Image (cartoon, rainbow, N blue to C red; front, side, top):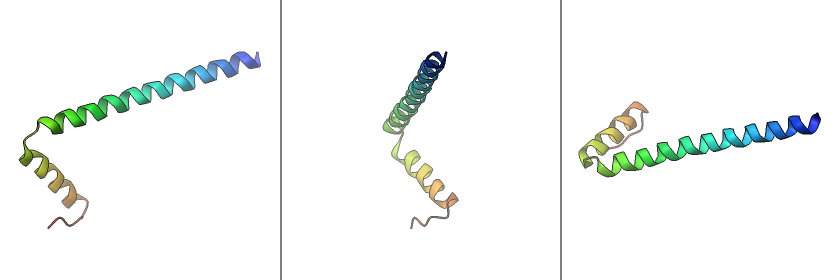
Length: 59
């Protein structure tokens, strides 16, 4: 009984890890794709606004 529980827990942990890795991969590729095809002004303005919202000087 105990070995079945351990095996089920390992399978669940592995599937959770694979799901998290898949989500991270999709988000990462989405960010690269979106910034790769965005106009430079859009990227600059997004970074500029983020810096100001975090009170980080950029000038």
